[in-house]
Length: 253
Ligand code: GDP
Ligand code: MG
Image 1 (tube, rainbow, N blue to C red):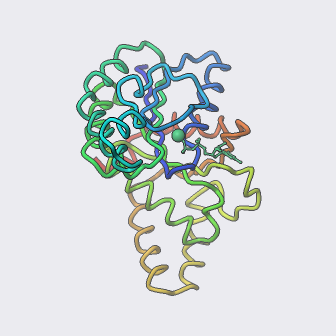
Image 2 (cartoon, helix red, strand yellow):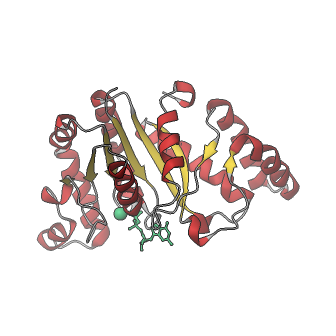
């Protein structure tokens, strides 16, 4: 088996870095070697020890100082530097002989995702290993009703379309929302979700219902793991999901 590369994407504060820390720890405890990559040039401190840290190439704080930029400007500039150095970063990843490579991405996902860089990263990773995937993370407290749950699936697909990597959604911070209504099996939940969306019958929920129907025809995977990166819970479920992503059924490319 070649190496498995997993890119963690999600809104600022959703728990990407914490999940990279928790999952890499879980893998290592299971005797599986892991290589961790930090691609966030603006992070203060990562909750894991990155094997490759993009801050050795570009540090958003230094860029802000050097170019007299605010935080957003510095991030955008940093992305340009990362794009320029992408080949070097990719060859670092290619040269590791670990089974798993976990890639942590910038806190603000929009600076990374809505640029060329995302697509090029996806392409580059796929050249290194066909088993390159993405995980889209949402904070459980964001998912309060059926429309939010549908939105999670829509966003996960949007990430897939930007990165061109097979992408699966994960709900993090389950410890903060133990009573979250939707869990587990999308197919089983879909009928209920669809009914609830239908009952709401607004333009928005009608649209989400139709979008969900289309997405589910492309996506045969059913489990949406609920994890707590902070507590290290749900790592087995996450791992199972990643192993299952090898099947090509959800591949839109
Ligand atoms: P990132 O911006 O997506 O990398 O998010 P971080 O990993 O830096 O996490 C942002 C904040 O959420 C930190 O204060 C974490 O401790 C917290 N956090 C991350 N995962 C969890 C979780 O599973 N449960 C709880 N309660 N907090 C979490
Ligand atoms: Mg982070």
